[in-house]
Image (tube, rainbow, N blue to C red; front, top):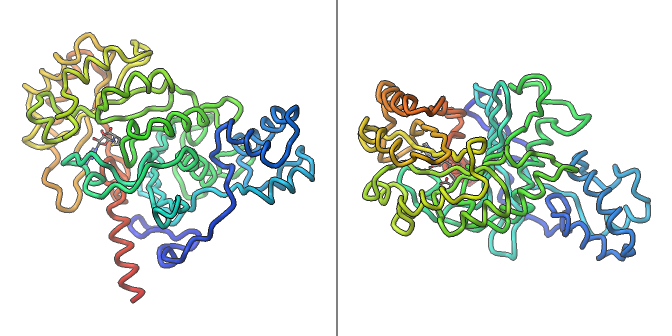
Length: 401
Ligand code: SAH
């Protein structure tokens, strides 16, 4: 497999203009309430719904079943009734790319919703490391925030993902990694060390602003962290936000997820330009909301992400100001080398500058702060998502003419 050519799966780019058929509603990605409602819908007696829901839940989320026929402890009659009305379809993987560092990026096509779009697409990235495997999921198609250094921000917002589409990214990734019990792992991948599941962590750092889709994100976290199903610990699920201040309390209360804040600047005048949402919720308000974040403690620190932009936000004085601003907050700092994209108005700070910045942060008591860019060769790194896909699509359409 080469790094730069997408590997075609399930049809590939050339067939992507084909109309999508209206399918039966899928239970893959449903909440517990959704599964119960589906059972009620097909006339399951009320007294059986709890037990049957638990069975379905186990098959869908623990075992990763892709057909009702696999559910051997569910009676044939019920399986038939389920099959008639519902499916277990997952979002479709249009292509998969494998980076030389083991990072995988999937382009995922979603079923059309309410005729408002024709199968929108999102990207989802898997990053294997020695002690963990992290899945980076998207919460929206496109984004409304227009952060000036982020490529996703230059693409137009299409819609929020549904709960099932968010959970579906984890199902698709586990399926392709062989990360359900009894399934084989891929032969061509770098996977984490013995004993851990391929996907041990989920970060909401793909496309979109999760706090502008909080209801679905919270329900998805509920399904992902359910101990009888996908079983991810809530402490291993991180939601990254540009700082939608009024929604932070609800995020903490409803999800118990770890919080990451895309800070990127220590002065409002600069942050207004980098993260325009700052004009609405300036730094002081954002940090006050972080201080009040439910569940933040030294054991559950808030991550502050800081993208390193050459000559823009990377001076020693800014490093010292960053440390001063975060004083007293249970914080971790994550320095992200800027990932360039075609036409981007910024450059990445050079290594010596990043080193100096990180030393100041380190001397103030914050450990291991620089994030290694992963999957840059397949444009899977932070802020690079989606764009390459659009270019490939345009190329495929031209070739088809
Ligand atoms: N909207 C959310 C989540 C998505 S972005 C948020 O803003 O947090 C995930 C992280 O990647 C954010 O910290 C974002 O600011 C950062 N990022 C975006 N573009 C980048 C780029 N080109 N290089 C490095 N990091 C980038």
